[in-house]
Length: 533
Image 1 (cartoon, helix red, strand yellow):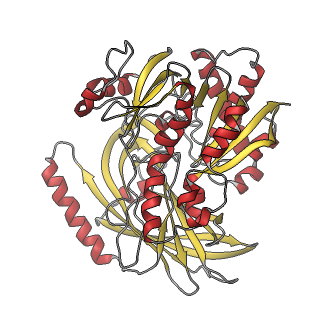
Image 2 (image 1 turned 30 degrees about the vertical axis):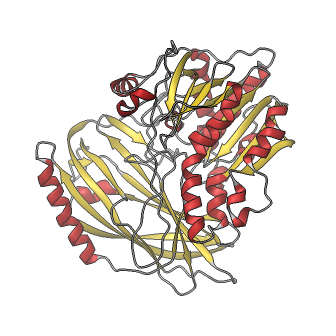
């Protein structure tokens, strides 16, 4: 998130006075990059584009970063490119967002007395070696959709934007051409009419788009994570983003653990809890994995909000947050106490504040334009007296034996069984563009995550999971017990976090070898052992 005073940012300015609003379904039909000389230096190159939406929700400002697929989230795709080829990204159905454009009163000297509040789409480009799996950010550019929405005279608009792309110290002035479609949504109009209108716009967009045939590879996002299906003449790898669930949906009521005497959230209760927030108390709750195959019962605890809230204003602050939380845990290592709700809230606010301070330093922003700093940068900044022991830190992959390009690397199971389970302490864990904290002791494990959506879709509260002698994990359909006790933490990471990307990549591997950089991004997990300085 941008924090410079010259640019719009939700924690710096109060929302303007709204005098009216319109709602549009905005879809990016095509992104075309021209004027960039690529492919030199030998070997295949990979070019990536990341797209982020930032603007208003119906009831206030929202800046959404790298999390699960909802309107407003980050979209990433990488494409193998060769010298002389035009670089084009095209989608058929997926890359769209519902945008509320509020009309705000302007000052008396503004010719446009009632203009829309900003709705910013940012395009960030990455570039690197295809076989090495490493890319670097080479440039970015932003587009204000509000300027287009306020003067729409056609349902499809093409906008060209200049962008400076820097590779190996050399800057190229390139141009991106963005083809967008706008469909105004009137809530009072029947859905059938809306669908018909959308189909008409799609036909117009298809007529204006130039078809391309480029080999492409999807690049999954995070926190969030976010990859989309693609069609076209070239071969593609399609990944459908999962939906997360809490507890037992109505059709699986029979799969509840009988006579547990503990809190079970299911059916309509699920909706109410997400809308009304989780209680800030320790309680045994059931959670169902995103693929619906596993059910966990364990103690859980929720903060009042998470890092994306207005109180915290830290949408990309996960690295700073885990540093602050890990330091707090180390400082309280003499006890097994977890933070109270007041302390947890305070840690989230403090870590987010530290992140915003880092965002004000030009050297950090130049290296990390998306403000998603790596752990080394945050530790070096010294926001807390915390260090990482490299001798007790480990990097591995989920099920590397299933992929040709991961032969010989350390597996998650090996790290857990031989290191984590034998070395209790505080670890900062990195997986899939997000950081969380893992604490282990003789009695159990704790997972502390400042992003609620990692656990439950729609959840806006940070959470703590405790895995101890009372935890158990079962198969959703049969209630067959998979494991009990503190080791449910290991199975939670495998079955609740990594299961879906692992299955998707396994299916791709059966067709052809999955590129290393895709495996690296989606299956690599890092455990960084922490101690106070």
